[in-house]
Length: 256
Ligand code: COA
Image (cartoon, rainbow, N blue to C red):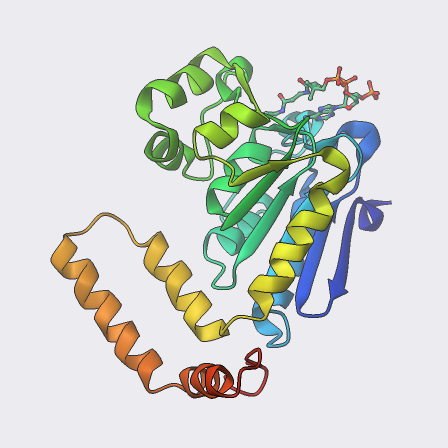
């Protein structure tokens, strides 16, 4: 059953998406991409969702696109489920946390370039062997991976189809931290919950600033100051300062 291949659940303000096809290493079918795109769309439109967490069941995050689908049901256009998923993920204004619980092949790795906080279990591995299948990189990874880990290392991964282990991925800045496999999801969820308590407009504006393309220092400072000025006038700031004065944790639920 396709519907069980993607599990969506809520934990307070955190919406969790679980790739759940462990017998196939969570390889992603069109139906799974569609379900994940729908989950991201519902997270975007539901104001009570502050953070999205993505992880997988079993010993794989995902082995990438289902290879059978490449032959039987290749994506055809801009409204195909895989494109809907990638567009929803890459344009998500709310923060996305990934907990990479095992092997991450192809889109399993490239989707991480669009996530904001990426954590991995010790057994996680990362590879982008598109060329081995006579394919080319997707999800803007030919731009984003060299930018993230450097051209030389990205070229080795893309062209030779090698894999990184979790520690290498951490050292290269692909993941923020590595945890024991059995603690990974709890650690990621703890951080997702913490992120969900922060001023949501400020979080989204910070994410948007970090995702802007190359520009001059002057242009970036200008963009930052505009957002900074907006936040200075926000109810979020009032709540943060009031909470500081009252020596309590801020509550941004009513401050947006
Ligand atoms: N699409 C469809 N099925 C896949 C799959 C994929 N991308 N990746 C794994 N599977 C299936 C296998 O066919 C196997 O199914 P079976 O039990 O019915 O034979 C099952 O998942 C388990 O995979 P297996 O190969 O036995 O596990 P492994 O631990 O030895 O190897 C991988 C795991 C991921 C290294 C290996 O399966 C692989 O290379 N898969 C292809 C990955 C890929 O090229 N993805 C696309 C990148 S663009």
